[in-house]
Image (cartoon, rainbow, N blue to C red; front, top):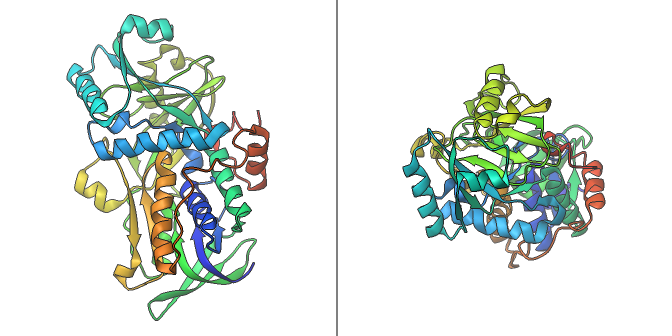
Length: 406
């Protein structure tokens, strides 16, 4: 590995690989390092929902608009990294009808296309839908195949000159004269590198990486379980139309559906309880929308950890509030050549990457515009090529293990 570079990006999830892609396309000399294979963290352990913004419309209109815009961009550039579905918000008999009305009105304000249908009409589209669904609302949700998306971003970054190193954990950082001057890498890399700028894109581990440089990124990670069960033929993503709670999303795959999720604080994103009650609660609540999943054979289950930013969580309070992303410029703490990016959602990874790349380019004196919203990802029209990228970068996550390679 060349031990000198313009930018070192730490973290091989969607945001990190998106940043590497953006910077490389702007002509920046960039290296990305990941301690495991790509997608081994939050990105590859999500439920894979491509948000339309409808879930957040009444809570945070600007964030919902960002989701809608990025939804459209990902459908345009992602090809086989995205499954073209719809979404259906369903109101059950016990759900507050005023919440349904508020969401519909908010979607209209944001510009999210909706269609309200009766419970009977919804059951015509989805015969197994619960009998007490009183009405429903179609929205333009979709499904992301994160292993392909992350690997394709890495491949495009490499095609534009970036170096991608998996199994290369950061073990220490040296700060001198208010700059990170050296970053020690272990694993397959086993080298010390000297970047001009460092980007910390490590999700729930951002606080740990920042601490190596004597910096502070306050995180409040939470875990959530996903349960994949056998179920064939569901077309749209199902969302329970109520305040966000456990077990309110069902994401369709080919012959399975992913049920999610819970939200439980964790102290260590590498070491946390995986409680059976979370699985039971998720299945029970999702079965209220789609009863056959209660007894459907379980194929696999996994937990993911959300990279939530403590100051936002403290200010806005708890689950159900839309979560944006935060770009933390550590120049404010006296380290001029380092930033961290935290929070956000898989749907808005590209926007997060663009904002971070803008900051890096400003610091490096690079005056080149972002092109990632306009250029399709490599292999977008070729699933086999995308899956080859996943294998090459050791990028298979549990979210889409039934889709990649099949």
